[in-house]
Length: 374
Image (cartoon, rainbow, N blue to C red; front, side, top):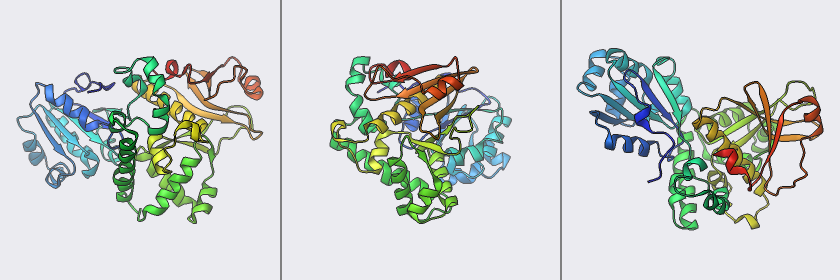
């Protein structure tokens, strides 16, 4: 079994709730099961999908909740976002039982953050689990082998089931099932979302615009819906860990684009499943977009897992000068351009160099990417 970056035994503490966010099927339950299989703690494990558990933990009834965990040292709740006011129930447990440890997992950052966040201020630690990061895959592959498999990661992504599938056909079946049965189903279950056709069409439009600034007005016109609906759906996509965004960076120039966002899919395989495009790299015209999506996401995983404190942006001017990724760390700016086919003569855009002096600029290519993301 591939070792994940997080080891739960070093993260659980008495009187604290460990919250594990992440998309469905990335291994949150497996990570939890692995920990429970060797812990010496007396634990109780339940699911938020269980109506009885929902009733107990949302009751805010002290005797009922405390009786539920009596005699245990650890409570583990999967899919905690389905329990109304779960944060208040967990607060009662850690307040009244300061010796108790709690782990809660959830596949919707919005639902779980809303119900768990405020009641547990100061009483929780949060981690986010993503599809396999390249740094995790170094536990089973060396750097040469990872580079050899790079085309596979660009097309099929790195969901655990996909990485371990033995054939391309099996990988495609798993990805299509993930999109149809988990991702779209999750979003449709959320408030005021009634039809999957518009959701899928919007996702397709975003998939074709990876690495480009997105206009909500253009999307709304193409789909025949209003701008607020587009924004609400995109917000849902982000809260269910399907996509993430970069905003435009600006500090000095009026001509810098700041009002539009770029959107990236958390996993290349999911992006390709949405547009039903699994051709090999030599038969595609979107390799540059796949490479940019892969690099931006793997770098995000590295920042998240290693707690690298940074603000991430893209940079572009109305005249078309651009840089794919800007990180603001420790008061310094670092600029990165993602290039599948590397030209050694690439230099930072003139306006960037003139406006933001004393900043580093690096081109991320298939030759040097592992140093950047692991």
